Length: 163
Image (tube, rainbow, N blue to C red; front, side, top):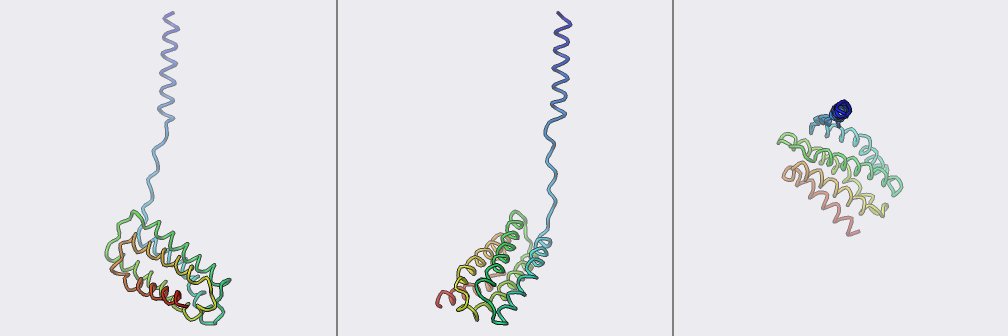
């Protein structure tokens, strides 16, 4: 009788030991990502798309079917960057780097005004870009550094609305 109790206690102790050892592992430490890394990734993604948009505009071959997928790529890249930037602390020098990237995007897209009549969906596309750029600016805290760029985009948007 005592042997059966000792056996059951021993069995319980062994089972408890295996349960404790086999418990869920600690989550792996998240890899630190810097603002510069995120912006480098964003710039690399945009470096192939923005020149294509500029080429289509300068060659006057921009239309809904050629511009829409490119603008969607820009929006996707900006959304990824804003999601990656959320939760990170952005220092002053990095804010200027973010503002520079936002400026590059705005300047590349400003040429679309010349072909706005040929692209009926441009208003909606630029609205999406505006939203994504605003998110990048908001998340990174670069409102003061990027206020001129946002006013440029607002001007583009107002001009397209008046067409």
